[in-house]
Length: 397
Image (cartoon, rainbow, N blue to C red; front, side, top):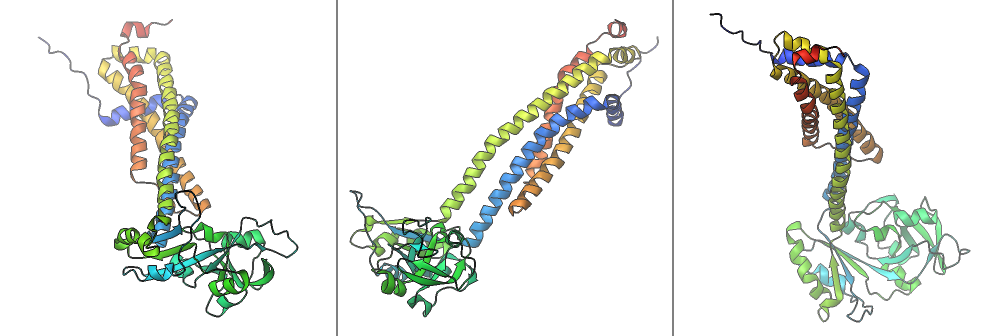
């Protein structure tokens, strides 16, 4: 008795070659279907990469600026009235053991304008602040042009402009005069932006002594900035209100400016989730395109399927062939999407001056999603092809 013939086994190389040959016969349709997958993957990779690049920039800013800066301001009373900090508040803060540097600024009821011809009411949102000499060191700031206040210039009508105030006043070099309240002050410096103290960016800064002599400064600081080691920040924060105003510690508000940057990083992560949802929708649309291509392929290749079945191909081998086609099609779109998404991320981050960052898990996760979509998209067409009886498949309609 003759033993039954065993079906030939398809090696992985045979499966991939058979799947690729089916795709080569329909290049235009394959390209359009792969494009749908590529758009979805490119969207997901670009969203993750751009968000990660923005977060990396914020984290590097935090590392450079430090998270150990605390800001002290006078809080309102229970009835909503204004309060002031004691004149010696900054000196008292400096006596706290872990504090390494402290500085203070005081609001002045003065205006600064480019010339004395401009009405006093047109301030451009610029404030005038009296400051101690340690402010720039405490904030970790830098002078873009000119020099910072010193013991001599802090006594005379000399002013240092924040980055925003210099732009709004149209001042781009030192030595230019500006009209502060009722007299000319000479610009001796322009600061770089201060991410931890944006209020300084919009200020014109004079020395405490000059503020007292020319602008009626009463000596009460409005804001105190201090730095201490990271390990001592929480402890210092707890004692600051009672140190600054022992009689009314509830009238002292303490904040940590770096929390704003950390919150921005967290908000960027939340926004990424929304955009990833849009990328997933695009990927789903691409999967539908792949499924449509594979279904049409089954209908067009009924004769081929019937011939292969009549020559001994099993249902499992037919299923494997069409699943392989779907996976190869999705993989091509996925690889194109990875390249496009990474390129967009690098280009956008470079344009914004951010460090280009694509998390290591993003390409792998996106490619895995591509294969899952490809398998799901090709499953129904593959099963349908495998179920076609050879006689029906070979029938010419």
